[in-house]
Image (cartoon, rainbow, N blue to C red; front, side):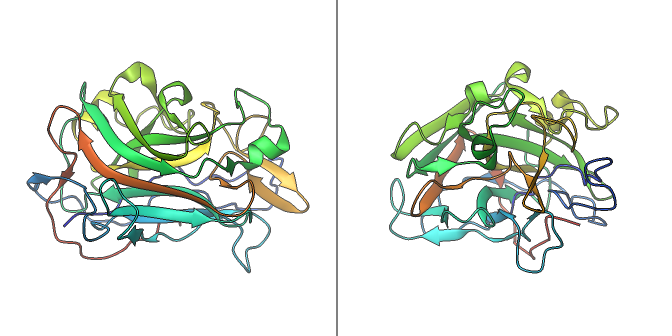
Length: 290
């Protein structure tokens, strides 16, 4: 069995634009125990279960006080009919911006998951090809191209809890979710030039790219827009904007242009034949935000 991915950025507090408001954005839970000894490696094929993958949505749940949050993580939905071959994890969303598809992934809670430096991550991704982001609707500034991308995420938890650091694939080597419908192979060779620390202004004292990639414990895919520049909570082309009294995380997650939109993941491996996760016993679900 396998574990969930905690796809994390830091908890931000806006200054001028969000005065008096403490918005909640993706963050690692605090107080987590140090990883145990590394387990044996096996693969994610989702033939009969969700293999302990997790998912979360982005948006404005009922009762939220005027700013968007990352929904509490929960077990990823599993399909017995959608797959390549059958069996996959997936999310389906509507046109509602308040529950946007955001991530599917796995966290190696019982130990680090190995070294991916220079190796190739690969999976099959399903898309209905009808995605939009708030940034596209908002005409966001910065380097956002308005497209919706699935991006590889590799991260590592600290020994005392929280995130040591995370890196995600740049838009130029990520998968445009509107460029196809059906199944597509998404592969990327782990190269520092093709990944960036997220957010870009994260604490520079946290472990380096090489450190995280050589001993990671979290892996999966994000969905968000084309920007590779998320430096702060304020300013055009970064994270927040005000929309009818609600602070929106304009680049985070995606919803359907019309009707419903579905994405799914299957067959997560490393292209060199070394699969990307550990064999372990799932012992609980942890919240993705604090």
